Image 1 (cartoon, rainbow, N blue to C red):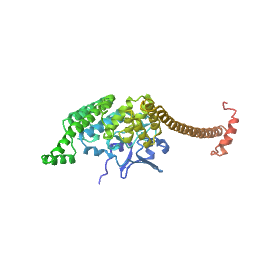
Image 2: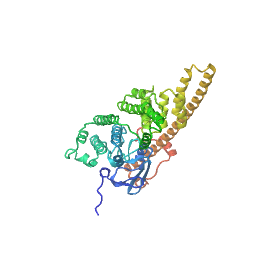
Image 3: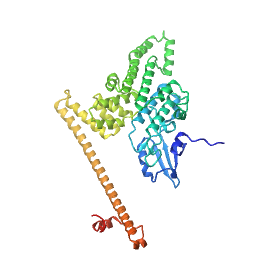
Image 4: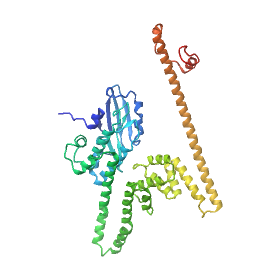
Length: 450
């Protein structure tokens, strides 16, 4: 029986990949540049919802990744509708385009991608500069990989490898040819956005009703003369409430894709947060943050935490805050136990109380005092934490300094041995202790500059 040929990802990484109870990437240590597992600790910072185990033996390095159960493997996208495929492709291009970590290098191919229920893709493996392949970033190959993966998602008539290697020689559909002809990420992203808008406009010509609701509607129609009044009420509800709401959701999504954040806010202003799908909450929360009176640095920090797989409560916090419903936002922040969100909620709530003319003077002052006291406690707690973190950093810095002194002392001893033949009989593993280092520093060698 012939052995299975290695996949594109295995060939590029020179690794063995197995998929059983997680994803295991096995590297032969002699084939990679890694010397110590601490060099790749940075990969643990990516996709923190993934459990990652790094195991080093004498011969091999194994990286085992356990995505949450809510994540699906790449082939699952072929079971979904056309719009879902284009949305996954859009999120993938956006993720690759916005990748900014210089030490981590992407490999874009189906075997390296999983996605969650909101169609947000994640990468299983990242190359680490000078440690794990790929060691360097190749913009041309990365863009070609991205186009081939997008083609495999939205069309799927050929394998990824065929789109990647033979896009100039094989006969592809007009869609695949146009996609593969794009020259940069901006053009590719715009092409995908236009396809999504086209599908949404097409969707507007249909009314999507769940199967269960369709059966109920059929029974109601059959018994129209008996249940005329309930059927009439249901029809009115669908026409005047449900359909306009769905229409508003579709329109807000179009505005969001076009980055018209103010239009997203205006379109959804009349609808309650509780009834919104999570994807709609995400776009609305992002739009409110974009219009929030924050510094650019603060906006970037907040937007980096708002993703399609964030806790929906986090979306609701920013929506309530943006709508001026500060007390509701504050309750959510307390539920999330997020100190920064609580402090921002308290500040906004304080301003709301100051301008509330319905409160009596004494009642207003009492509420303001309560808010200020709580805010002071959080500020004090934050300052204490920052102080502890600073002290910890200083201790770490001191340890590094002592280590550097020891290393310098060892190098000095080795240099002395090279210049003094009589020192050949001496041992080479003597290391000066921190206390001895102080004595050495007070007595520098005559040949060494002060």
